[in-house]
Image (tube, rainbow, N blue to C red):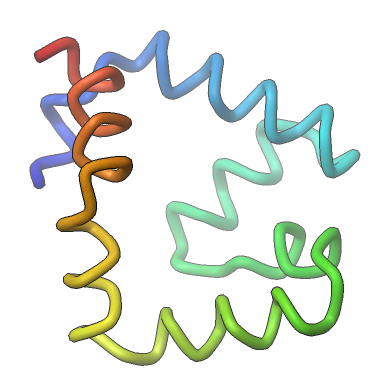
Length: 82
């Protein structure tokens, strides 16, 4: 997946929605995610979900498996306008 193919307005909308849900400014969230950090997102999750997320992010095969799901593919297509 090439992040350059994703519509910036759709990404901004997604960031705004997540920002409101977890109570973190969208700019801060964007900077963290672009740097590969998930601190704000993880702090808003319950401990069990945060642990699972961290395990997934440390396992490239698991990430590949998650990204190949129909739900992930549909989200990517929606964000990229394809």
